[in-house]
Amino acid sequence: MGNTIKTQQEVEAFLRQFMPKFDIWGIVFLNREKNLDTLFRLGLTEAARKDIVRSIDTLDYVETIEDALSYGEMWVFGKDYDGQELYIKISLGQPSSRTICISFHIAEHPIRYAFK
Image 1 (cartoon, rainbow, N blue to C red):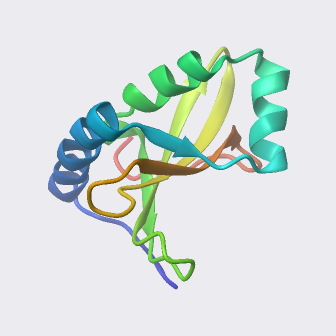
Image 2 (cartoon, rainbow, N blue to C red; image 1 turned 60 degrees about the vertical axis):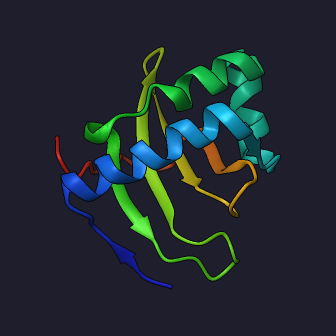
Image 3 (cartoon, helix red, strand yellow; image 1 turned 120 degrees about the vertical axis):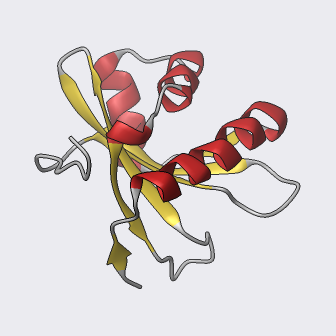
């Protein structure tokens, strides 16, 4: 498992694959404790969480993680929501199935963006 920084073109290509798949197949959010705690603390609905993921763009990119847990490449992004920096880790998932959001929580450390 290793972390890499992709080029802006590679991030754009990933998002061009991810967003239509997300719109067609949907997304699975893993219900880890810190993910659920963030929803509660920020008063986020499921629809708002989906809207935040849908709003991700290239400038929000942080890094890519080669996964040892069978999710394939995991792409890390950050988003500001109501003054809180969110740490969001997504994956394309399996072919012909939903995309996956492994992490969606308040950042535990300051996020270092690749292109900002």
